[in-house]
Image 1 (cartoon, rainbow, N blue to C red):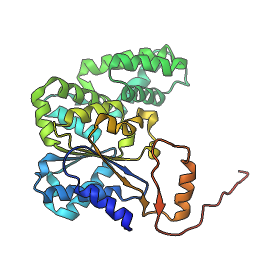
Image 2 (cartoon, one colour):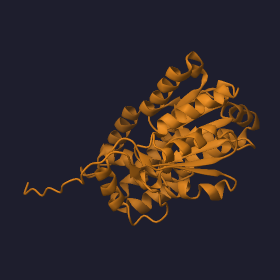
Image 3 (spheres, one colour):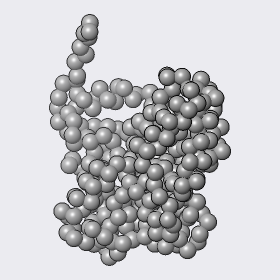
Image 4 (cartoon, rainbow, N blue to C red):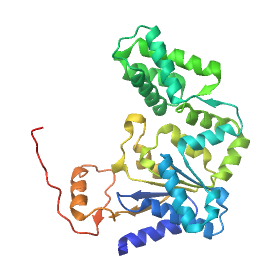
Length: 313
């Protein structure tokens, strides 16, 4: 690491209590930073059972757990490294008997219902399932989701609304939650049961969230409920890398982090250790009109700009 990268890296690792936002550019070693900060918390005497790392994919969660194990040994197994949905499922399963509806079974039910409604062939079960997922992740209630569905997918009406109603009834009758219900149900449990909330706030006393720019409103509500009075949250992300608006993610949540947590520290990791200078300069040109965050991206290695190749086919 160069001097700039090392200085910021050390500051993040040494951050102890209170909220912090880490703006991490591409290739800046954010996973390494998260893992080393976690190791530093353990070194300071924080119980591993009070540390939770949250990210978006099982692969990323597994990578963090693996690296932490290599760094600190078996104690890493007591640190919870999880996806948002896996975390929500753990919260739910400790206190309820709710079952999760497999995605393939949900798709089968939707396809069967479309067939029974004699829906046009252009309305595919996969499309409907994607629409349901999008509105569920972008809203905070079933009623709000249905309104959003009718607004965004008016061309698929009235079939979409009828399938939605049948699908909700199917889940309720059988005591199922689908993948997108998990976050909502976990939020409801934490909001309405102070004992469950207190137990999980202890479990997530030191909370680190990766890819924060891709969080949605429901995930944000879950995080707020998991935070105790110390608000020990470290959010790592980059607004310029937000790519999941189609599934309800709202990049404004990372831009408003300091509004939500007025006393937060802010750190920047602008050095790209993965790509050479030509790649980084090309990337900077693509995002030059993004004014919300001006992260001074830089590379350590020289390299040419990419060549633009135009082909007829």
